[in-house]
Length: 129
View 1 (cartoon, rainbow, N blue to C red):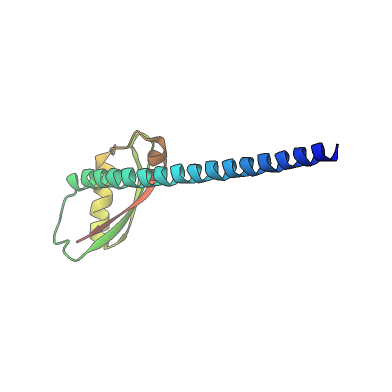
View 2 (cartoon, rainbow, N blue to C red):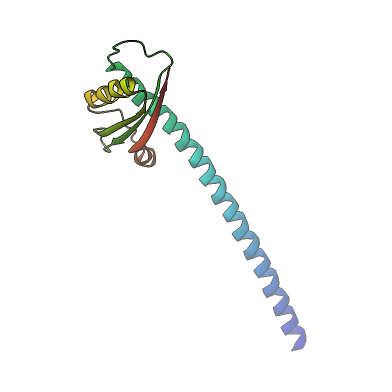
């Protein structure tokens, strides 16, 4: 009976070790998937930001030299791309021109990926010349 109990205890320990090893493996796989997903989102975010910046620049009316000037344009955007607000910090005239261009653009190109779309809804684009 003692031998049977010892055998059962050993089997339980081995099962617990296998379970722990399996849990660790699953956690590592999940961490790897999360890391790959974050890299994908970041890549899509960069592409989407470039498209938004290009759309705003299409509507930019340059009234004088913007060489050497910069502006950080903070945008609030609806999920469908509608510009809700644009606030610039930096060179007053460049920021005003960029804000006007953003509002004139009306609807900006937004990604269909829900996670990327959500991150872009409140974004800052930096313009430096």
